[in-house]
Length: 232
Ligand SMILES: Nc1ncnc2c1ncn2[C@@H]1O[C@H](COP(=O)(O)OP(=O)(O)OP(=O)(O)O)[C@@H](O)[C@H]1O
View 1 (tube, rainbow, N blue to C red):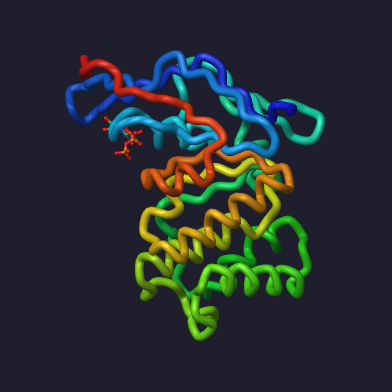
View 2 (spheres, rainbow, N blue to C red):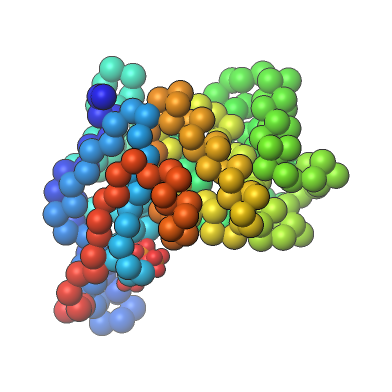
């Protein structure tokens, strides 16, 4: 299978400017390659740098060293030195992201939130609406909530809207940061099923899953991580 994402020799050190410029190394010599149709799970103790690596792969964190190569159609883009226009385009078409929490936007309904990434790339409102409603229904978000803003939803309901938004487009690469953290077993099963369907259509996935049962269902490979030495 062909790789779609290659990270080479990634190093990342946080510098805490308001705490005496303490340096906190979190990632060293991180190498990974991700292939079409597989799910790679970042695996390690709390504080081992899983979220930091995932954020670096999405371009949210600058890294101090290394390359993050992402395939867009027939070309490779190095995310580490990409400009903001390239990153926006990459996120619209190639790189999907499901965070642990939904960023609630006042007055935007759950249905609108799930439709938005589709509308952004020119999918018709009718198709975007049908896809949004299919996903909200699959994820057991009650129909009476679809036209309401999720600010007042429960944590699990907000997270299911977030997951629907992440799966609304057929991104070639998906980054999942603990998507099942606040879900019950029935809804975890729905998310596992969405991940398996995405893999079947050829999506490549990097994820963090703390629940060992979920991890077993979705992981093709584990990427082991361990915490680095104390700050200096
Ligand atoms: N924005 C930041 N600024 C400074 N330090 C940070 C920042 N984000 C993470 N860290 C530190 O980096 C280390 C790794 O954190 P990270 O969240 O990547 O670990 P993790 O493996 O995802 O942990 P968990 O499983 O608990 O979520 C921790 O020591 C954390 O304090």
